[in-house]
Length: 118
Image (cartoon, rainbow, N blue to C red; front, side, top):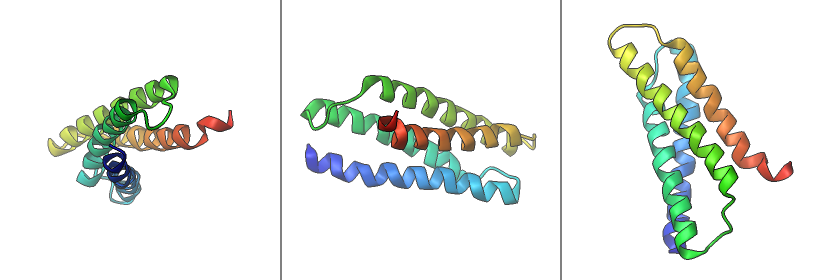
């Protein structure tokens, strides 16, 4: 289980890079990047897998409050990215949704990295 956990961690980080990087690219192009949508999907699924693996194998003590907050943010990010991509495929403007998804993705990274400081 620990090996599988260690293999999913880089996938989770790549999803974060795709999500935030896709958002930064979309700031210049003014259109949502499909990389951003796939990054949100990967983040959500790999995050759930990491928590499940950590709980199953008792690898790490899981802070359920932190995971709950991160899950809510990740669900909102994925939803905003999906809806923004759908709207932009139809030709509608979705800049505010795209930027909200990107900003919340950065917030999710900050929650993950700075949680233990407070």
